[in-house]
Length: 223
Image (cartoon, rainbow, N blue to C red; front, side, top):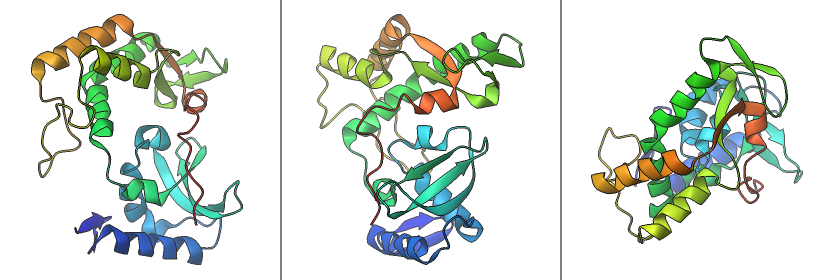
């Protein structure tokens, strides 16, 4: 199946993986990969944890040596922080369950954004409740307080509604669509109500938010 990344078309995901692997192994470590920015940005958007990886936004990509002493891709955010990521995870097809969780997240996006806006209430900065540092609206994320993380709430709701994790109610993939949505509108409304009643939202810095990524969600080492 053909795949397009940054305007470049590859015959298969395998061909795309070979090109990205070549970029990683030929690049000078620490030097911005400006000529590959569009390709790598499209690649990162396919990561199963893309939202947290992208954070406040990406300004550049480079190759770095990770904790496993292997070369890996590293994204530099607009606030100067960095994150490494596995290109293999970006090219992997998401499971139906992962797409359903993403659809649930989209369904409550308005409530999450509203929580952020209420926290600022016209102020230019607020103090992060974890780091104590002042942050602007562009430097924060809305966190679901543990143990009721977003993933935990999605699991509990799915169990309550006896949702088939292998075939959850999500819309079909259509050209031009970004992601999928909950296809059962009544179920979607019940989820919104469940989330509003159960979610404990807090506005924290993106720096603190990255520390809340559950164990096991970190990337595997590159080649």
